[in-house]
Image (cartoon, rainbow, N blue to C red; front, top):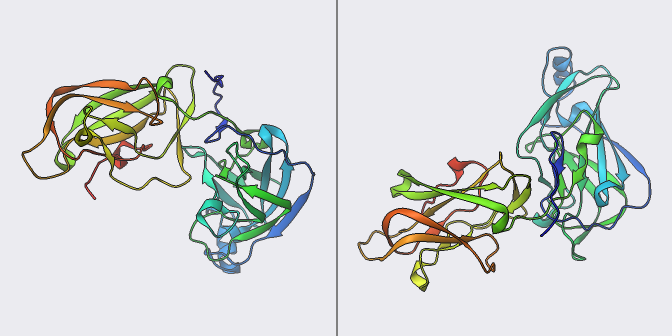
Length: 320
């Protein structure tokens, strides 16, 4: 069994075990953003002392290599001279390239404190280009970053050297660089979690399965549908109701649950196989899946399940 990491209020977790080649050369790159979706100098004037949120064009950025947590990039943001703005405590929109596999995913489920930027005050985000222990990856020598995902011209930061990218992640913006370190956490297994099941009436009726980590455990749950079955025959096997969420995962702890919605019947017919239980595992190859008793016997025909979600409202299994 893997080691457990004690949670701390500002700690950030990777989506998988980190086995990143340490970034070895200390270097710093600085860039100024071009015109953003927030407008030109007139918009800058509007930011002064009126509490408006920062846009990419309001800030200067610098990038340094750090060796903690297997190696990552620390990006520092400061307001341009004469500007005062507020930076939300969420992860930036970032990418190491133009393909889906180079997109940077957030690693914190909830927003942290908003930061007021003015003068020498800075905000920090930690970005790890590779959060998985594999030699495979897409090579890149630059990082593209924006404060929001709809800005026309994000900033581009040159990297000190070419880096291999695979499931890149970013922390929220933080006022303290010590809080922007992407610490590693292992993926969840079925044995790490406690499960509960409740009936829901939306979408014709389904079961909402809630997964919470056991006390003292924090782990990451990939945003895919669980491997599940209402029995031992092929017709009782549960199929995904949606494609996997590429390069995405959910941090799970005792206070941060994940949800999947499972419908036992996705077709309009009276035919089906009766069942009183649901078997479920996280990885699809575990020898001891968890078995959940159902409130009553249910008729099963082409059952479907959503991906694991951080919000139960997103775990409603609508047939495709």
